[in-house]
Length: 116
Image 1 (cartoon, helix red, strand yellow):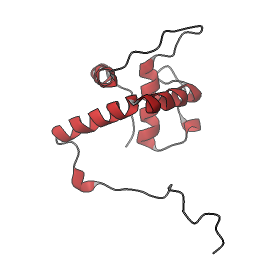
Image 2 (cartoon, rainbow, N blue to C red):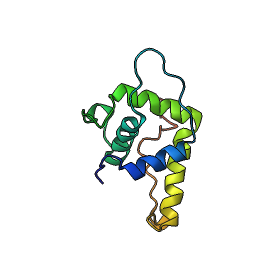
Image 3 (spheres, rainbow, N blue to C red):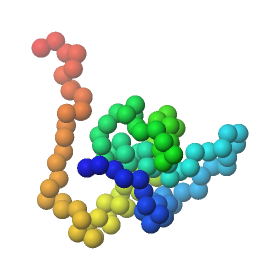
């Protein structure tokens, strides 16, 4: 699946699902939140590394996007957005829950480092 930048209607939906008020800006002007979400969705859809994030007017710098991702993860914003999108996808019959796959290749082994 290849990611295309968020449309205006998709961006409106994301802002609604965020249900979040950003902190006041201080110092350097904040990167547009839409660019940050474009960056996060690009990584999620393409399964690539942060260093593979495209540069351009529709994307944030990789360090900026990653920092916001961590902040939103801690504050529950990421769960609200992804959960809301999943619920909407299920309601629209765009998500078939019979086709769920869990990949455990990145799970740490409980036996790592133990003599065997």
